[in-house]
Structures are given as C-alpha cells and as structure tokens.
Length: 111
Length: 114
Image (cartoon, rainbow over the protein chains, first blue to last red):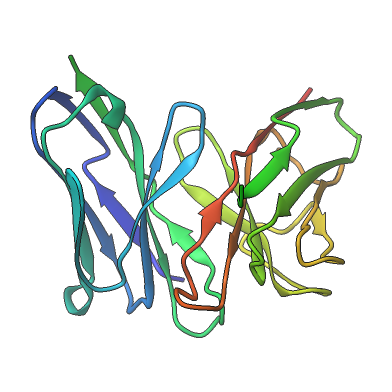
C-alpha cells in the first residue's frame, strides 16, 4: 500500500516563529488532507489539497502531486498551534477513498 | 448543528467482554469510517461503509465488527477476539458531493480494557 512519511517528527519553536511541515507519499493520490489534532484528541480539518496551493489565515499548504509531496506552512506561531499535525492521503479507485495517515509532526510552541 | 457525535467519550471494560462504540452523523454523508489510534501513532483504518447495508474491511479489521443499518449510524463492536483493544477510536464521514473525499472526524472514544 501507499506509504506516507512526515518530517520532522518533532518541532519546538518560540511563539512568533514560522514553520514548515513536510509530507512525502509513495504513489499518486487524489485526496490529501492536513489535520491538527488538539490535546483532547479532536482532529480538526485544516486543508483538503490534492494539488495546488491554499491559504487560510496564518496557515497555507502546497501539494506538488507530480513530485509526491505536500508542505504545510505556519506563520507567526501561537501557543494554540501546539499539537500534532497529520497528513493523510487517499488513492484513486475506492470511491469514497479511505485515508492513509502519516505518523505526524508534534509541534510545541513555547511562549 | 451538523456534525459527528461519538459516545461515550471514555469507556472502561474488563478483558473478555464485547463493547460497542457509537457513531452518529447528521451531515447526510454517504460514507462512514472507523479508525484506531495508538499512542504516538497515526490513524489506521478498521472498517468503512460507502452506503447503507454495505461495509468493507480496512487494514486492521480483525477482532472488530460493524453494521450500517441507517445512513446516520455506524456502530463499531470491539470483540473479545481483539488482542489489544485499548486505544483511541475515531469515527469519520465523507460525502460524494462537491468534495467527494474530504473526511470529517468525530471527537473520539478512549477505550481502556483491563
């Protein structure tokens, strides 16, 4: 099956810093989502981005499908950005595609 | 408000007992999914259903069972055959309209089996 690798596994930053999280995947995908898992375990949808670039406030994401990677950018980090960020991909052929998750990047923002 | 609800939030069971986790959605989504998350890991797919009265095994279906009798509901039973049932269980749903594959998640159920 498809492999999803996220880097770095852990990231510790001062409040106000910028960060880039990376997601590499091993095959063509037709679904890619970025999630933020908060301390209570809730998965919050950040982006649905199988290709192209999107922005939402301080967050933006880019997926280069032909090169099989996606990047999540967080600017001017706040303590509320702390948590685990997951990339998940879906492969063509299953209708409503099942998602394969990476193991996440744990982001800690220090005041 | 539209959304996905899971109950209970925390569940404790003795080894050897079956337990059923509830998942309900009022988003009118066709597809529903169950995932399992272990500490420090990503999510892994247990079962999914694209339509009422139909469901498919995911990557780790052994020891679990599901039913899909209503569009809104997709309960998961963790049976005594599941070797390591203690985990965080998340339910998700997606629609076939507009963004066909974007999945939305419920708040999860933490199951502890002793």
